[in-house]
Image (cartoon, rainbow, N blue to C red; front, side, top):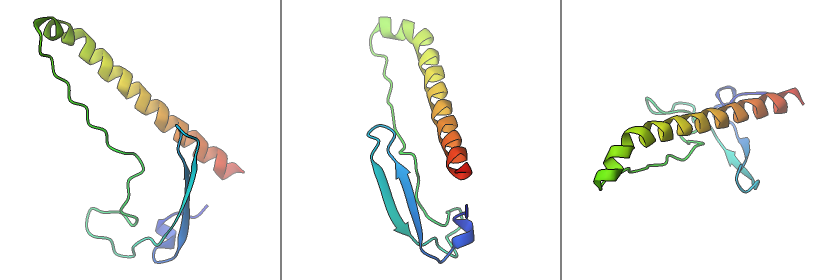
Length: 97
């Protein structure tokens, strides 16, 4: 399997699948030969950035936030790790086929 780095300036086909909808996508791209500093050859991101704003307004929310907030952050971290492992395993399986 060739990398994006090996194909700078040449057309490549990028394929991916939405894990939620199972919908397949395909795009033809040309990796940049000389991307700007601190940017990659494709200039894209695979994972959308999500922003969550937490507000603890009532006294009860403020008291329990000391327990629930760390637990929620830990659950989120495990979800992210799981998705990264899933992606890694899928890449290994597709490379061995």
